[in-house]
Amino acid sequence: MKKGAKQGLRDLRQPAAQEPPKITFPCDYPLKVVGDAADDFPAAVCQVIIKHAPDFDESTLQVVDSRNGRFQSVRVTIIATGEQQISELFDELKATGRVHMVV
Image 1 (cartoon, helix red, strand yellow):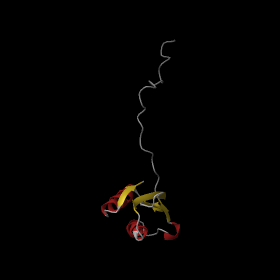
Image 2: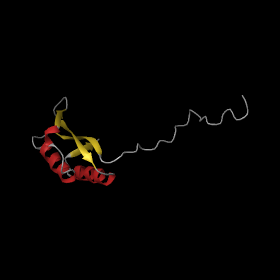
Image 3: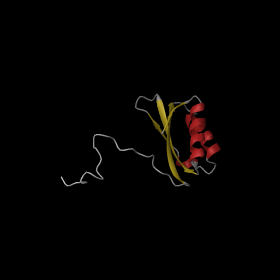
Image 4: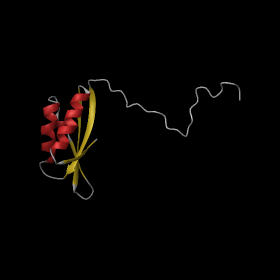
């Protein structure tokens, strides 16, 4: 190998340092909120989302029941305005005690 041939190559056994993807705001931001299935779960999720994204269009909401019917996922897309908005929305959804996961 020529001198300096390894320059610019990384050891493939070591994972490359990955930075989180950069998001340019405002943008469409999809969310999937998972909780125990209940008739009022989608409405409870919407109530929190509207507080943080007042322009949210409820007609775009999708509810998907789990195979055994124990859980529901509420899928929405908001217009995200910044990282703080997303963080506060995630925190408040989890604080309801009804949400198991927000993706």
